[in-house]
Image (cartoon, rainbow, N blue to C red; front, side, top):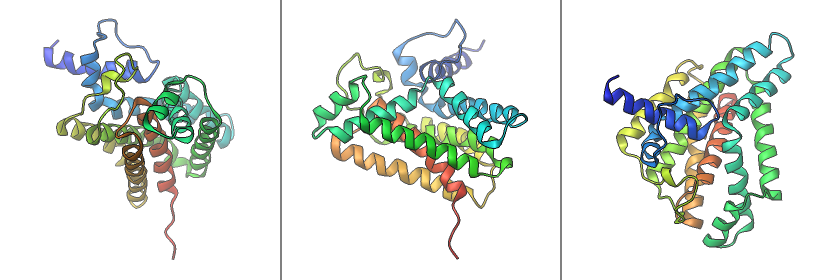
Length: 256
């Protein structure tokens, strides 16, 4: 195998191992440096997770009503990722909801226990994703899963491009992701995220991308104000919020 191809495959499988519970080849290494270069493949991981959700939707819809098929599809994506991003969302919400200064916010986010803020926001976000996907036309649902997961992970990568990682503890789980990504890596991630979007209705796509971008920008400003950058939990929250915003954008109807 060409060394450059092997290296890129290691980066991709490194991201896949970190963000999902899907199996990867035995020859893939575990180095922190490998994972630090894997951010360009975040949307590619999203493509796979979205494909899992879309395929479960297609199969389940042959046997059950749309609501149950969507529920099974969302459950499949949560299983595929081990609720990794959902956990980040709940931890981030608890931290910013209960903390009053940077050190306290970071301390709460590191706590494995889930508080009331995290539970409420997690339930509302899951419910929002479910209801938005149910309202989409059946012919859109498959690609909405794929595009929503890819675009939302690009939003997380964009945060890594624009902001600094703020945790100083070396044993932090997301520490290998602390390095800023390069413009080329961001371009690769963006191109990957855009591909499935091209198969969605053109007139609905701009609002979906706009809302996902607006949510990412808003959360970035919020993080910057309170803790001066991002943590792994902050990235998970961006992914969850941007995915929901993408679905809502696909459904948006302009007045008039």
